[in-house]
Length: 182
Image (cartoon, rainbow, N blue to C red; front, side, top):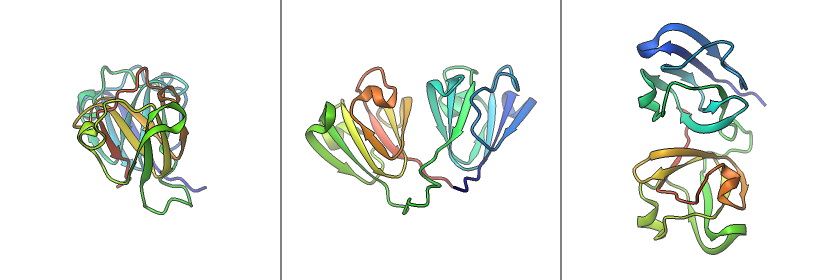
């Protein structure tokens, strides 16, 4: 599968200081940089992790400039691993985005199918909690709070039987957005 992407990490704000350019998944960035205070995403969509080996808080970035960690909603300057968002480059991705939400684990309870961004899950689903999800196509970001704020969780094509399957500590979802590479 041909996946093209390029991201540049900088130790200091406003693209200053030591930098590291990356075009593939990297499970450990600390040997290249001691901290990360700004980022340029030149191509592709990327998920960044606060800890090595794709663990900890996630931040999903698309093409653009992020002059400090607050611009990607970071909690601090710790980015220790990264990988490209896979489903957007998958040969089966048709450009259509779809998923189904469920009120209970194991795809039980009320179902809601979606193919667009939702700035407020409660306004559409009338619940603040999502216990399970089936991503039929595309890649999505679940945000902890409405209006695309709070902790972020990347969901790519597949089945998520429990909220812990997308690494969430609780089932609260406030908003949902498609990941589209620009």
